[in-house]
Length: 194
Image (cartoon, rainbow, N blue to C red; front, top):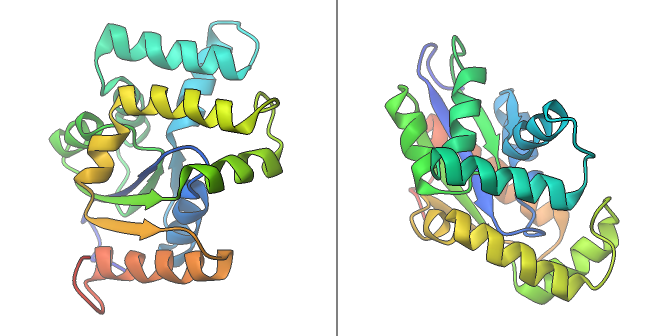
């Protein structure tokens, strides 16, 4: 565990179906840290507006927030949630470098962990998980969601990440790597970034 008072946010990014939510959960468990899900903040805004909680509404509201307040709009919502919180924390769903910079401007040391998986593998995962709003052709859905996420800034966040996990194996392998990165990123244990 990191020294008390040190505010570190480990922010996990990646395209839909890459496994970023699993990575975020494993890191949070390893550190005993609270987990904040960026998508939950957008879903909360959808509900606040009285809209049905559909994939289309979530994407529309996310886009509207970013058009009105910039690429760091959702991080602004998160920053309010983090007021008075001491680190470490884990953030699931960082969408842009601007979001990381906003958190840094609020006194957080941000460590970005990118999760990469090939498109076809992500499509098969999305088809298998059966979430609401993800019915239909998984290849088409991945293409649409990738386009939106890249527009939000995910590709740049992934390119500038401090750590990269290539998720093409099993859950056990993913968990082991996520927990290793948690220890290295926060505590400086083990090997260097890579």
